[in-house]
Structure formats: C-alpha cells, structure tokens
Image 1 (cartoon, one colour):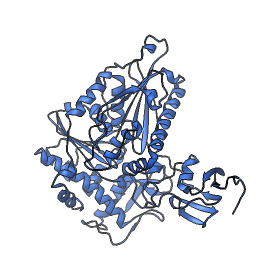
Image 2 (image 1 turned 180 degrees about the vertical axis):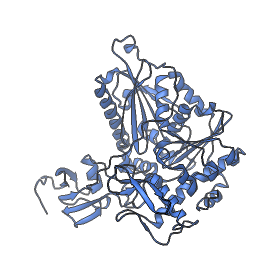
Image 3 (image 1 turned 60 degrees about the horizontal axis):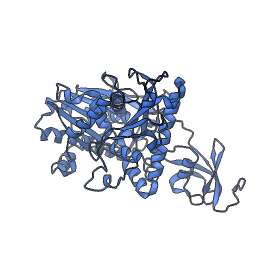
Length: 511
C-alpha cells in the first residue's frame, strides 16, 4: 500500500485514478463511486449506487482487495489506487426533431431593445439521460447552433425514482446545481462558438419530464414518489434566469413550460406544441418511450394522456450487457435469408454492449428462430459475442417494459372506444423511438401489431417545442392552455390495468 501524498489529516485519504494518474483527497468512508464523482468523472451507476446493477466496476490496484469490484460498495479507509474502465463511450444524442414554423415574437428585455448587437435566445431539453441545448437568432428564430451532453445527474441513478430518493436523502442541492452548471456550460460554449457574449442572450426556455423539472427548479419531490402522486406545481414558470443560476443577460428571462401531471411533464407538452397534435385531422397516438412511457391519444382536437412505468430496460439499464446508444453498442440485429444472425455496432468497432434498439431487434430475431418462446422462456443465456450476451433475466426486464406500454395503449383506446385499427398514425418521440426498428417493436408486442406500418419517428420533438416556446411568447402561453385541456388517465386506478398488463407480458403477437 502506498502512503505517498497522504494528507496530514488522518480523516482524509488519497485516491489515485489510473490510467489518468489523477489523485484527489476524500474523506474516510467515501465510496469509490462518490470519489469518482468528486474527481470529475461520470461513472455509470444506473441503480444509483445501491450495488444492484454491477455497472460501476473498477479495478482495485492498491489499498484494498485487488481485482474488479463494484465501486459503490468499496469505502475508502486508506490511500487507494484504482483503474477506471478503459472503454470510452461516445453517446449518440438526438438533437433534431419534427417541428413547424411559427412567427418570431419573443419577449426581449428593455435594455436589449434597439441594441445594435444581434440578440439570441436559448432553449433546453433536459432529459433524464441527455441534455440538448439550442441557440436561436431572436430576429428570425433561426437555429444558430446546438450543443448537447449527458445529464450529469446520471451517476446518481439511471431513472427518476433513484434520483428522487437521492434528493430526499439530502441530495436535492447536488442534483439541481450540477444540472444548472452543465446548462450554463452548454450555453457558454454555444456563445463562444459564434463569438458573442452570453449577455446577448435574452431568454432561455426549459422542458423536461416532471421529475427533471422538479429537480431543476428545486421543488419538493415527495409528492412524486408517494401515492396519490401529484406534482408540486403545474403552472408555467416565468422568472429571471439568474434566479436559477443561469448566466445570460442580467434581466434575461427563464421560461419553464407547464407540467401536465405527476409523470407527464413539460417535455410531453413540448411535443404536443411541436406537432400541433390537437390540430391534426387524424386519430393520432404519440409516444415518448424512455424510463417512463408517456402516451398521448388525440382525436378531434381532444387529447388523453397517461404514463407507464416502463423502467430503464429500453435505455440499457437493468440489462446485463445493456448500455446507452454510444460507441461499442450493438444497435441493430438482423436475420439473413438463411436465418443467420448479424449485427451492427455503433462506431463500427468491437461490441461492448447492447442498447435498446439492439435489444428489440435481437429479441425479435430469437423469437423468429424459436430460441425464445411465446412466454419469454429461453433455455439458456444467448451469447452474441464472447463478451456480450442476453440473459433470461434480460428477457424478463424487457417483457415488463413492453407490457406496460402496450397495456397503456390498449386501455386508452378502450376508454375512448377506439379500435387499434382506427389509429391513423403513431408518432414516436425521443432517441429510442428514432433508432428502433418499428417492425421489431411490433414483433415483440411493444406496439400492438395493428399499428404496424403506421409509425412515424419525430425525433427530439421536445427540443423543437422548447424552441417554439422561446421564439414566440404567444406559443409559450398557448402551451399552458393546451396542458389544461389534456385529460389525464391514471392507469394505476384502472381496475383492468393489471389484467391487461399481464396479458401483454407474452410475445404471442398475431399478424
């Protein structure tokens, strides 16, 4: 054990991270997971550091039992040297989506009116996994540049439940501050890219799911994690950007879109705004598939919404070799005419895991090969490569996710007395929906087979809605009116939900 660099204060120790040879001091008892966070790393910890996901592993070189171990379970009690994973993941972050043109009518601070310098606006889609930020010309609403990154809250849990629990345990400030700091960095980088001062940015809009909005705004989140589940506030937020630590013009405004309900947030509202959903002359079903599946059914201008607890399986969490869609992820799997399986890898290198779209494809292929039966039974784990496999438990996690979404679709249709065949279009929002193969989604029952051929990916429509809300003040206020018009369906209160959910667990889809 090395003692070099030991602090004279015996309650702190030195942790050295290889291969960077970076050392920091941490308090005794700090977990290696937290030490990585303090050192500026973003370790994967989908379970929030509870020792369940086994994805925060590091190699202990000195100062503890040598070998690969879960960093959330190792507490620093002396100087340690650890080796971080050598795998570098460059994540695919979806920045573009379907949108519509609107008149440019933004709110501008008096101090900037008549300025000879160009004025800009910013819009942010705060996702559970990623953040996308946009810079727009206030004169014509034209997008100027875009910036994105992973949500820095991810090391505190892959899903909103883990983050809510972390906030309730005293981590609310940490979660709010880290994401505010990151948004500032994204905005500053965009300003520097086009050579302007951040004080030329007149306003910033923000959308996100209910949990992300609560955490950013530092609202109490206890009502989101305990029945009867309701948001602290549904109203839109109009305030000085500086009130939330956002560094733009001193009198620049922050515009936060309305939360619709407990688990249907401002991001869903932004999708409605971007697609003009209530004005479409078709029966439309819009779905944003993520940790939660938000669904909106629209007919004759009326909208019905619900949220399904799909879990993080479709984003790679709780899957043994699951990962986000980035370098090294198997993203698509196919069968050739001879029933031979092949796959593609993001970045064209060696496969190091499988992301949600690849998981759907692989399951559909194994169903066709009868390696997985209609109940989800598989005799043994399926080895894709020497290091990437699909386990029986992975199949169970996928079944839970896809059954929740399919059950939500069926119950919404039943409530409005609409058959699945009556639905004219299925608008799929978000990164997962953009990259997934709709045929695979129908083959495994994530989407009912009756919706085959009707799927339209709409990309990051939430980000597009955030843009509309900042470039046209009337559209921002209209979005709140839309939020009040949406009928919310609490699936948990529906007697038929559990039976429908169980019925959808199997893979026995019919053509």
